[in-house]
Image 1 (cartoon, rainbow, N blue to C red):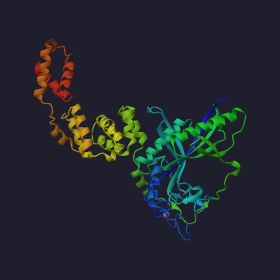
Image 2: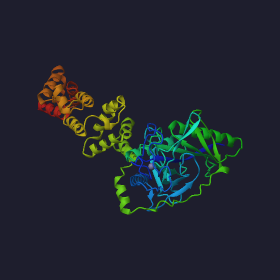
Image 3: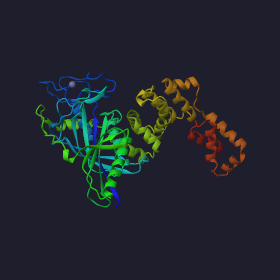
Image 4: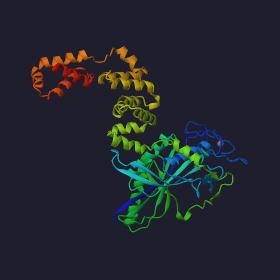
Length: 478
Ligand SMILES: [Zn+2]
């Protein structure tokens, strides 16, 4: 009997709003640099009398994320109290949206493979806002409770069981990261805890519509961990089923050092969270006008951009990867092509010298020292044949180092555009060396034309305008 892997995910994305979800504390994005319990207040540590107030900015970002995920945004929702005891949860409950999530029925489209060929759609069951917990730290045999992270805003995204392989899971999560980054909702870095993933794994008999019992492995924070945890669970469940055993519904924890998961709790000790509507927060009502405003802010789905680069521009995967891995570079690219710059020319410079400079300097596109206006000027000079290909390489390398304009560098280097006279001299030189070409063309056989143009291009370092070469050639033949 062979089995098919069935996976669904619960993904937590940490919003990058200025403040925490229900208080005025700063919503720190990286906790490592922060002194323990220095980013807290009476609200996020649940002091008597303190009341939560929903952050408008966090709500805006959550709504934008829902729209970007193609969800139906519910006009009316409320928050629930999820009661459970955990030492790093100061109020003994989490505020979430259990019964009336603001968003249902979304979908995420993505390419599964690295060549951008195989498309896949995964359905989103719901997406809702909730608070994060604090952290328990173990130091010198003691437990330290750090509430810096307490009440920071999360959006939890729950998918349908649409995944059939680890490749699909990884490609989906990368697309989710792109959506979050492109919309400046979250950096969604797994390693920084800005994205955390629970994987639900089950097996079904091949060809059957019936799903097997699932297990959930919680809080994965690396792509390699996610892959290993799914593979571990697939192997474990297959062995049980092959031995005619039964899969037990379990919540499991992943041990990233020994690469195994172990049982946290089974169905028998499932917790009763005693959900009830959060009495300290009003019902959340969203107006159509507000939702329209949020729709205007959400950028084009990065999947559609990848599709455009692949199908319309016929870019190779190197170009596509460069363009979709840096939001600022991508935005500049989109603006430039909208203004009529040739897509291939812009992508060539971005994937070539600019990407190399970013790699060498471990930088992002926003750190580039020359302005967009200078980049435009550089591209203008290429399209007007003022810069040879070799010269352009020198100019952009210098621009990346010094931040100077193309104009300044051209003057410094003494680069000059190719003149009509130079082109005519080069053509004459070619015909002097190979007079048979001239004879052939004069007799009406134009086959050598491209050879001559190519020779002149070579002599000019790729700087001569082929149209000018063609015209010069006609003058000589006339
Ligand atoms: Zn606070």
